[in-house]
Length: 231
Image 1 (cartoon, one colour):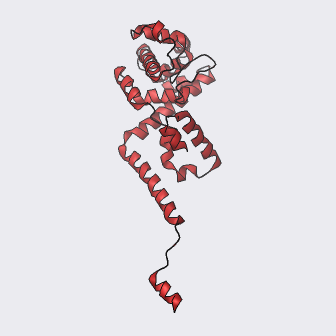
Image 2: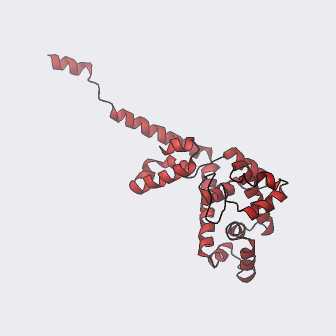
Image 3: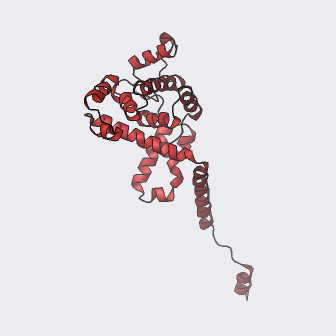
């Protein structure tokens, strides 16, 4: 069922179902290693690749943030009124519309559309990367907590180690958010770094299900057994 949801572009539902199945079956990941591609899908791949290229960003980072923000639910809306795949709030969306020469009055009611949402979100992430001179942890933290907060943390809680800086942030929510986005990014990089891994997962799936079909078949009696039974 999770694979059907995945094919139907219901990525958030496929991820949720996979997590629930893993809770029920302690051997789930040993029996279904290829399911990692359902848990970390490359949703809307052409769109994310295009916007990553346009903004000189790693596609894995865009996937990582979108997975954490919306679980790839395109019409997601948070309590803070953040909208869409990359959970853009309206003030930020308006700023990015100006930066990308989009007419705000035209798009303001279309922020949940993937092409517009990812365009604005990826542009914002690029500007954060430039602002923080490619300090990845700071850029991700600002995407979550805002530039003002991160500017203050860099000024008053600076540390030469990016990981140590992350640990001394005053907001637990932001620390956890950045840690999860970095984890997501590493997983996407791993899954996308070697085509052979994808082939392995696909082969393991088909091989296992072929074996189950064979086990389910009733054994055929040999001719010698039939002759023996008649005699």
